Image (cartoon, rainbow, N blue to C red):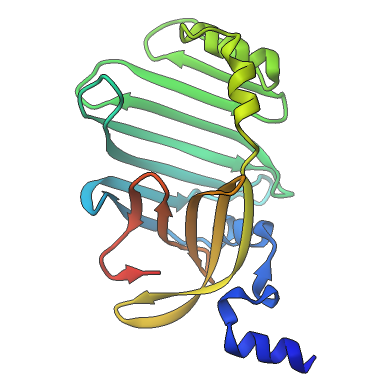
Length: 227
């Protein structure tokens, strides 16, 4: 016991005693009732904004988180474009994921893509706004091949992509962030794919997202918050 206490005091960030279930942090974000308003930066330059806020909760229903935002993306072989989105994440009364819905589009374009993810039905749907029909894909290997084919990509490429990728892993622990030079306790959710880090997400103890750092040049937060 004394060894664990020394380890916690000398090196608190690495102590396994700080580990918490990812589900606990997710529940805080869902039930905390906090609004997260973050600026998006690309390599330190302003690139957009992200908003996450709670929806109206009803006693006989689950909970809803409302998302919106925009970001400038530089895609291969394309000019930089500002992508905008709004959507929602819904859970049932037991806090299980019920549905994810969203609208994505490029600013100044008349077209938008409607996306619906239904885990209970194991379906992913998309539809171009203004059109009367869309497509649905099952959430399995055959659905991934169908989606690639719809995008004009060789569906056989799925096997090569799948072999080269591992399912991302998420861990959470107690940590700290600095807000206006004041150190406060927070949760740190780390997302990794194999040995490669993808993102670190700092969440307050009340469930507010404070700062996000990705491995591909984008950060979300404000100038007042540093990990």
